[in-house]
Image (tube, rainbow, N blue to C red; front, side, top):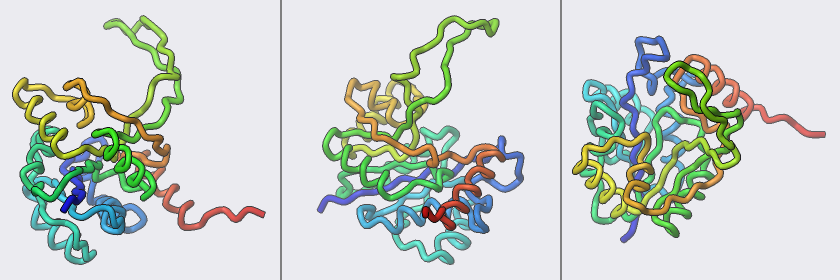
Length: 236
């Protein structure tokens, strides 16, 4: 039986948030950010299992204060995170089973993702082997030198800001991580490991609302988006 597993890394400390509480547990609309993210995956029938990656010291807290009280039934394992995000994902890979044919990876602090994005990136990965969600870059982009003088203005029409979810056939993801480990390579996202092998990665149109909460301004923006979704504008 072919099933789909989701790996959700949520082991970041959140230095840029200037909070003692780690980012995944900060409140968004009075509920921890991580709960919002898990609810999306819990409610999507396509997802069969969730492997959650958190800081080692947080594992008991997450089980007792998030998984159990919010009745998440799809979380099959809570794994300790590593020093870097790539290390955290690597720690989760052994929790995949022979039944899992496709793996979705999504940031635990990207709670505003919608089901249709997940469905589209999963479908694209089934067809191409690897797919990511992304949005066109809005601002002008320039490269600079070491003295902060502009070297070049880049044509932004071919530039995309890549988000999560990212989805991969399991054998491709495992091979990409094995190859990266062998060469000591660290990428900026999981797709970069696949690209490094020369394999194609499909980009699926994302959403500018699918933000990653990294700074206090991001949290404020997320509160605005949640409020707008709860009270949609009524058109005449």
